Length: 114
View 1 (cartoon, rainbow, N blue to C red):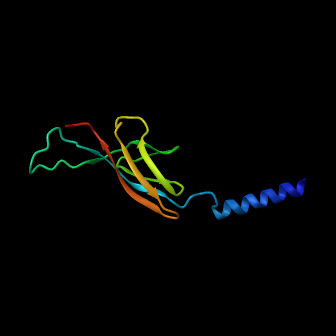
View 2 (tube, one colour):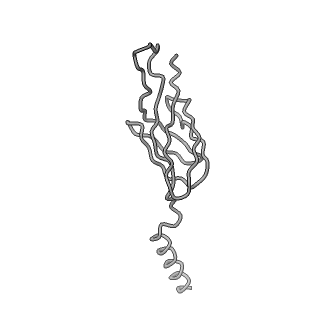
């Protein structure tokens, strides 16, 4: 019985040291909110602005920082990213995560300003 426990522990240590199970893939990018001006006029730019929001890709929850940036580890596959509560209910994007890489995306949240 002790030998089995030692073997299990040794395998767990080797697997943990190799990083098996931790994806080396995911999504990175920025979240922008827009429009940000109640009335857009010719010659007066009204760019979308970075925003901090809570998001979800499948069952994985993550957040962007105050500059709108985020990076989240995800297994390869196609994900729909949506807002996970908060001020911006209209955040939605679809992205495909490749194997062994991070896909870069921009997620736009609709402010509802028209």
